[in-house]
Image 1 (spheres, one colour):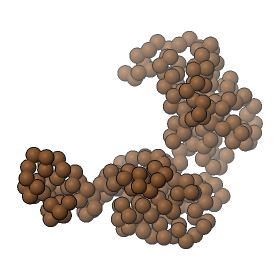
Image 2 (cartoon, helix red, strand yellow):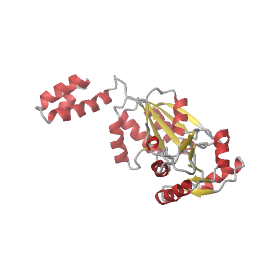
Image 3 (cartoon, one colour):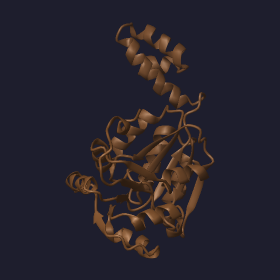
Image 4 (cartoon, one colour):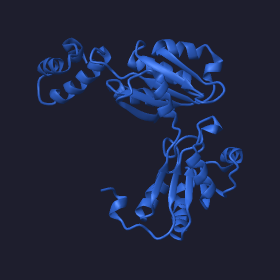
Length: 282
């Protein structure tokens, strides 16, 4: 039973979490359009940005700004409105709210107050990119935006290097070149990857290849450095030497707390397949 099911529903309104297009304005679903036209209020990440979508579809519903800087305070007011009977739609600038966008506090507050929360599904850049990438899609993990600073970014990537799932990241035009270079350095230049840029927009591109090749291609082409990016990286395989070493070091550190270094290295190598000498040297 869900947390919402544990609480009596509040008498009053409802919160609709509405996915909007990630580029092409005609990707708004008929149900999403009808919902946005019928609710009493639309909570939008940027009301100026959303105005173009609403005008395109002839939607005149009043909007209110809900973004990372005011979400905590605004959520309490919106919950009170819904408790009073108002139906409210939550949208972000593009795609599905809460996926690297504001909305978590509002949804949590609404559920805590017993207000029904209904998703109106639609576009999500991460899933759209995965569907076109040609990488394994049975298991994947969404990591959002990587840290802005290279040292922190590489530390985060080291944790993910041995992950067998397809990895999905968002990245900005300001950091795409540096992020691809760090991905190649930490995961190995031969790891398969895809860079999806400006999905559903006029200059959409989906590039595939190795991390080293993609890093080089984007670095020398200014056009491939513009827009919004989804970067997908194939997960580590059983034969991935870098992944084996990372896992071997993790196991070695655990064992070395109780065993002599040589014995810990030997056992860690047997467990993970990592080279014993490399573990002992580390």
